[in-house]
Picture 1 (tube, one colour):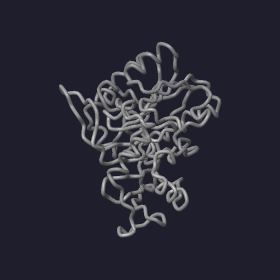
Picture 2 (cartoon, one colour):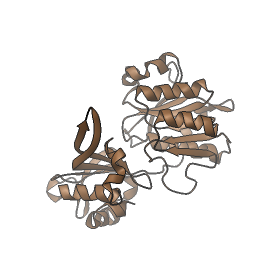
Picture 3 (cartoon, rainbow, N blue to C red):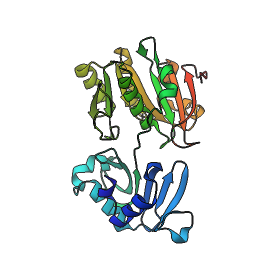
Picture 4 (cartoon, helix red, strand yellow):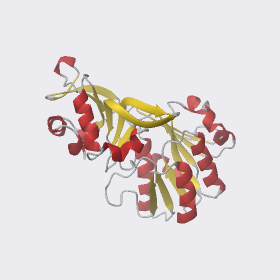
Length: 300
C-alpha cells in the first residue's frame, strides 16, 4: 500500500535503500526535510537512504503532501471527509496518516479539513509474540482480566493488542473476542490476522460499537484502542457491568501522569482494570516497562 501513496521516487529510495521493517513513521511537511522515525531515532531521508546531514536531505513540498493524501483517499477526498474531520486517514492495510492543515468549523462543529501542509505516515508492523511476556498476567483462572495498556503515541499499543488476540487463537482459547477497530487500523490486511475466534466492528464509536457488539455478538472479551473521552469510559463500564472483559489502551508517558487524568478517575477508583501494562519507546516501540495490579503495585 505504501507504494500506492508515496511519490514513485520517494518510494523507490525507501524500498531499496532503507530497511522498511524498522521504519515506524514517515513525516512529510511542506518545504521541510522528509523525516523517518526508526524506533526512537529520527533521521532525514536522502537520495542514498537515511542521513543525519541536513544538506543531503530530500525536502517535501506542499504539492507532495497533498498528493500523498489524495492517493491515500483513493482519489476521493470527499469520501474520507469523516476521517479528515478528526485529523487522520486510514488506508487499506492499516497505514494511518495523521494530517496537518486548516480545520473548518461551523456552529462549533468541524466540517472538514483543507490546505493540507503535513502528513505523518504511520506504518503498522506485526511484532510476533510481543504480548507473551504479559500474557499469563492477563489470562488467569480460565478468564481474562480487564487490562489497560498505557504508552505514549507510537510505542506499540496497537501492535500489542493485535498480537494478544492472535495469541489467544494460537493457544486455542476459544473466547468470543470482539475487536472494536474505531479507526480501521487494527488489521494488517493479512488473512486471519486477528485469529480464529474474533469478530470485528470497524469505524464505530466505542459507545455504539460496545452496545451493538454485546447485543449481537455476545463477546467474552472486547479489545479496543485509545480510550480517552468520557464516552469511552462509559462504554467500558457498560461492558464490564454486562460481564464482558475489556482489553484496551490509553495514551500516557508514565503511570503518575495517567493517574492524574480526570477522565479515568472512575475506572481507577472502582478498580475496573485489574492489570496495567506500561510500554515505552526506550529500546524501540513495545519496550515493556512494567506490569501493575489494580492498586498500581508492580507485578513485573
